[in-house]
Length: 129
Image (cartoon, rainbow, N blue to C red; front, side, top):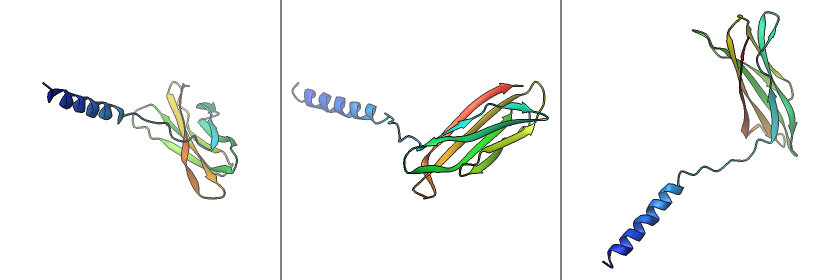
């Protein structure tokens, strides 16, 4: 009986370690904050825009991407990119009654270096127009 106790204890320790192995920890926050506008009708097109809202110390905007996908058969995702502080504006043809999904991301640069992870994921924002 004495041999069983250490074996059971070791099994419990191994199981508790395996259970903790799947725990995710949050990564660092993106150094810049971007916003994404929901899909909106602008004449004959639907647009969405990703823009820089602000950056922390030693960081600056590197690029923003805005994408729109109409949720209809054979549709594709259309994206546009803005460099630096320029907004990313994407547009697709407007079809009444269709649902559109806008997504995007914003990436920052640290101390004049190329894009530095993590990039901020934007959306999805959905609108039926």
